[in-house]
Image (cartoon, rainbow, N blue to C red; front, side, top):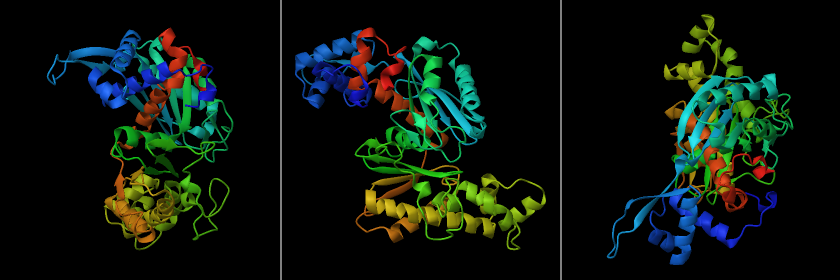
Length: 421
């Protein structure tokens, strides 16, 4: 949260409130004595801040905890049911929507086909209708915030997509304003892969890792970077766009961004589908050739099926894709030195062979020190990573000292659409 975005000065009292709240909601402290030990705050300060948070409805007292020699302390719990956040991860062809409580737990989800090429207004109207269908008995007054993930570059400060290659008509569209006007609360908009990286770092395989690269290999290719425990968006929000790194081979291949030789244009799911027709004519092909002759459309799922059935041409296509992704990642490893790389996306999670090829390419082309303890794994959260990451993005912003200083006294952030403006 940028403190310059909010009108209130953050006092030391609010900062300590946020510290106490974070310790309890992140399960790092469950009692007042534990909060004191973890935070270094005096006992009377801890007692005062806990009382304020209980009064605000963010904390509640629970059972007696374990005694360490004196009177047993009362345990505290975070009121995850105090409010809800709406989240939507909009892909090129599929949209996932969900409702999460304040712990980041998804309580309801739905997936539906979508086509971002029809433009922002019809797409977002449709997404809004999906979210409305999930609300059920949950009132809009209980919605504290909205998180939206988009499949293209997003300027974090404004929540607007900027020249997204696969989203005609979306450049500069006020996505934040669209949802703020409908739900009457603050809205955060981010690149979909940043959301996935956040999901894995907060609730997936990357928990406990401070420096992480998340790579999505689907129709396109993108990455999200976690640096020192925080998502790294860069100056404008464009960090991690690995899909448009230029590779040396096949510079005649034009990417959707307008440049040639981009990783995405050579190794993404769209590139695999583009090359599938020619591959199906290869006499060595078994499964792809048969499916093509039967009239079945050749998409990523068919290519993966063919590889699973041992089609040598499909295996070569996926191996070549994985090798290109691995070589690009090797450069990022040498620059960023992560402790973990998480591979996601429909192509990235398709085969053990795909992951093994990426690992081999990274290890072969990275410096030994950078890979000494490097783990390269697939995403266990799969399609839920983005929704979970968006939920945590919204919750972390809402409960930051800067935002708390704006809404805590009034009791709810509902109705405050300007928390992000």
